[in-house]
Image 1 (cartoon, rainbow, N blue to C red):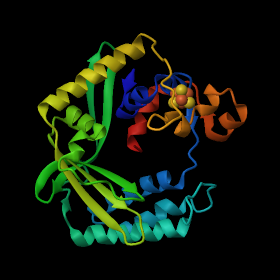
Image 2 (image 1 turned 90 degrees about the vertical axis):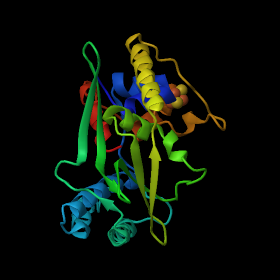
Image 3 (image 1 turned 30 degrees about the vertical axis):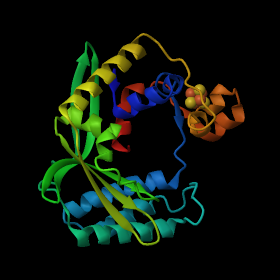
Length: 267
Ligand code: SF4
């Protein structure tokens, strides 16, 4: 069995949802424009570091979805997302705070770790490079609102960064956040992950994998703040036995669980 950060975090959120997704094969339909755009944008970033025309790369990637039946947030359109992306790429290039010395080897880096007999944990790091002259592992995010920056050190608590630091052994981490708003903004959020945090994450993975192996998939249901996970859960229709909701949000792909670590490529 191959595990990934996405799988572990989904199990932590709700083991029942994990079972629907990874054992029964119920996947969320890819209908959110922002999610697909984020993937196109990351490919354009890779083109930027390879010293190619990143604006043209973004257009080419995103153009494939011009007529797709996506859900756009209020005020968003295919054109608007493209223009925001181009502005963000220009801002990022002008600020010139991130260096990737070997873009052919230091982008989308596969890391893996053996967990036990027949089990492996796989992660894809977005990049390893320098942010403001400090070598670190880098995670790109596209979003519509700024990430909080205070109090200092906040991002050392980000579970995805801790996971990637655990699997790579690199303590210095950075999240580069591309904020799609009227005046585009790029945030450069750095943190240091301690050895203790890495060891704790390793123990967390071990515990989760043991529970999955033992077939523990009890629901962690919640519909009221702050535990309202069911309200944004794609598997809500299955828990409510509501066929209409299931058909609207899910597609079933049984037998694909061995390829689920590929989620990491789009996460
Ligand atoms: S709807 Fe709620 S209980 Fe059901 S899988 Fe989703 S989060 Fe879990």
